Each structure stands twice: as structure tokens, then as C-alpha cells.
Amino acid sequence: MKHQQLTPFPDGFLWGASTSAYQVEGAWNEGGKGPSVIDKATFSDKITDFTVTSDHYHRFKQDVALFAELGLRTYRFSIAWSRLFPQGSGELNAEGVAFYQQLIDELRHHNIEPLVTLYHFDLPWALQEKGGWSDPATIDAFVHFARTAFELYGDRVNYWLTINEQNMMILKGDVIGTLPPGTPDPQKTLYQQNHHMMLAQAKAMIACHEMLPQAKIGPAPNISCVYPASSRPEDVLAANNFTSIRNWLYLDLACFGHYNAVAWSFMREKGYLPTITEQEMAILRQGKPDFIAFNYYASATVGADLPYSNGEQEAGKLLDQQLAGIDTIVYVGVENRWLKKNQFNWYIDPVGFRITARQIYERYRLTLIVTENGLGAFDELTADNKVHDDYRIAYLHDHIEQLQLAISDGVELFGYCPWSAIDLVSTHQGIRKRYGFIYVNRDEHDLKDLARFKKKSFSWYQRVIQTNGQNLSEGVDY
Ligand code: BG6
Image (cartoon, rainbow, N blue to C red; front, side, top):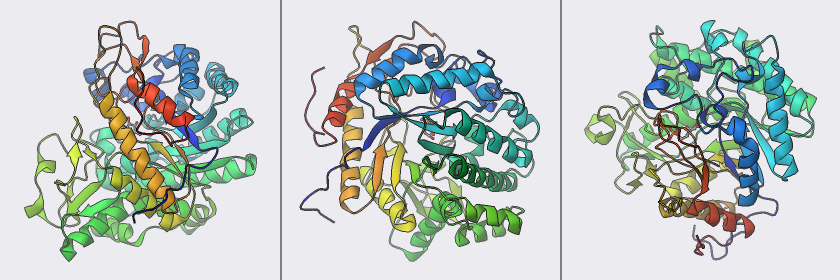
């Protein structure tokens, strides 16, 4: 649809930016924090330093002051579960409690609305050792953790996110580190874990509504529209398969409380069906989100069979959360010749962003917020401490433009939080893959002075926020 007139971003729109605890805080073993699966993951020590990351734990006041200067109306961050509960459950760590109290107070002091993710990939190691999400006791531990967070911070936090990218944890369990290496029957195990996480999420949403009637809570999956490789009906069917398995399985359970039919039949065919009870399904039906948060980086394209496949099969490329991958009887990830790629081989597809937002809104009719969207790139700090990241400005410009088109299409959207507020360590590609508006001076293993420098995109986004998204194209002084 070509609009003659665009609908403006709503008043009070939550312009924000995001991070997650294990990627930004550092202080991995300070302040009484227990280890998480990330601290124990073997991939992390080889590529980069994960122990200090951006040192936000020690520098949060300076960082929040910069976020305020940027003009953020909301800041999305996650609570490190093992900072509150070093053992995953049991004794509460007072220093961890105090850290998030101070962070939230600092944000409030600057009129920045905290948007809190309860769990962003960093399961406490003590729980993982007992079976992690395969063990139903982890559901109770999560619910206890969530209730504690509501109790501690509920008077100052209005927006909560349950689990970040649960779909990626299941689809890419090997990349994210959800599953210990060598787990027998990994796929079946992951779908059982998925069911447990869904229950944990539903119970947390129920608890939130009981304890904090004024607060709002929702899931935060990674959702991408899926294109068929061609107009051949079999390819369209494959795209439909992948949409159900990648996207709707998770959101149907969260919003409707039922398993998506196509995803269910996929799991049955493959022998991945989880064990479920009627009582559990009743809980899933009862727990309802107030909104849907979604992360979007790129669209996906799939075909029905191997003749189409090309780039995605190259060695190493499958190890990435933004590539569809291959399941020969269901879908085959293929190249999309219409789209450009970033330096890390992820597609850049702003129109896909609009399509994705429309698809989610049309299906669930819940208000949306974008909790991640951004460009990972090799930024260069110049001799005079500048970062001329015009490529990031171009990416964000084109995506925000499409977001306004989605709003003009009728999509209800209340916020946009690009990834990331400040440079942080990527999930599996180190600090060299930078996303932030603020540069952090460190390399993979040489931590330098961790000084902060505003990038050109900082000034640009500041203007976007000041003008409520009406001034995307104007240049900025830098
Ligand atoms: C999402 C995650 O998958 O994408 C973030 O929620 C992550 O934690 C982001 O950092 C970008 O991915 P990557 O692999 O480039 O860090």
C-alpha cells in the first residue's frame, strides 16, 4: 500500500535502546553473582573476553547519563538471574538486589522508563547442572525469580519482558548454549524444554497480573517474515512451514494458549513431541500477554528442496541465528537475490520489517514494541575518537521509515528499542561486531581503558527522538 499521508509516531512513543546483562555488565563473578551458562560456555573464552564485557556494572551511572543525553525514553536491559539468585533459587543475593535497584533509580532519576527482560540467555549454571530447562524444577525457579523481581522492583517498573528469543534458544540451541554439548536426542530435548519455558512464561505472566495490576508484560521472540524462494506452490508451502515452526509456534502458545497445528505436526513427524498435560495446557491458556515485543534483524527465505539451496549450506554459516538452515523435508534456507547483506552475512531488509510487524499485529491484535533491531559492523575509532557509522544510520533510517509505514497501515506500536544502546559483546562474534550508539574502547582480549565515545549515530538518533521520528533524513553535526 502506498500511503498518501503517513500516520505520525504516537505521542509518548517509547524511543529506546536495548542491552542484555551478560553482554554488557561484566563483573561476572563480583557482587556475589553466581555463574551462568554463558560463563561456563566453552565458545566464549576463545573468541573474546566475556568477563568484563562493557563494564556497565561499574560504569552504569556514566552510561545512564549518556542514555539521558541521547534522549532515551526507555532503556531495555535484563536482570542476570544468577546475580539475584547465585544458585538459581534459594538464597537471594543482597548485592545483586541493590545493583538493579540503583540502576532503576538512576533511570527514573533521568526520566527513562525501565523495560526489564527477566531472562536473556543466561540461565544460572547451578540450574543447568541439574538439567536446566529439561528439569521441571527450573519452571518453579523461574517463577520464584520473576515473583521476586516483581516484588523488589514492581513499584518502579511498568514494563516487563519474560524470555528473550525463546525461539532462537530452541532453533539454535547449539549457538546460544541452551543445550550442553553431547545431550542425547537434542531436538526432542529442546522441544520439551520449550514446553517448560512456555509454562514458566505463562506462570510469570499470571503472577505479574496478580501482583502488579498496573504493569504490563509480554514475550520477546525474534520474529522474521519468511519469503518463498519462488511462486511455486511447494515453495510457498515451505515458507508457510517455516513461519509456523520459527514464529507462530511460540506466539500462538503465548497469546492463544494452544500449539500451532503445523508446528505440532512437524514435531510429531520428527518424533520431537513434548510430554504435556491438560492441566499445563490450562495454565498456558490462562497466562496472557499485554503486548508483544519482538526482535527483528532480517527476513528469511526458504524453498521446498535442495536444488534451490546455495549460500546457506557453506561450512560455518549454519551456526547463526539469522539463517533459516535446512530441514530437507520441511524447508531449505536459500539466498535472496533481492537483498543486500551486512558484513556478517545477515540480510538487510527494511520492507521485511514492515511486513513482519503487520503479520504479527494482524494475527494477534496486540500492541507491539520492537525490542531489538540494528546493524552489527566493524566500527573504526579515528585518531580524534570519532566513529563515522553512516552505514548504521542508513540501516536505522530505513527501518524506522518502514515502521512508520507499518503504523500507517494500522499496526499499533508503542516503542522502538534498537540493539544496542552501547557497544557490547555479540552472542558469538565478539566485540568486533558492534551495534551501539556509544563506542566502548576495547578489543577482544585487550580491554584498554573501556572509555565511552559517542558515535555519529548517537547524534542522529538523538535528533530522531527529539523530533518524534519526523526528521529521519536530516544530516547531523558531528
Ligand atoms: C539477538 C539477541 O539474537 O540478537 C542478542 O537477543 C544478540 O543477545 C543480537 O546480541 C545480535 O546478535 P549477535 O549474534 O550479532 O550478537
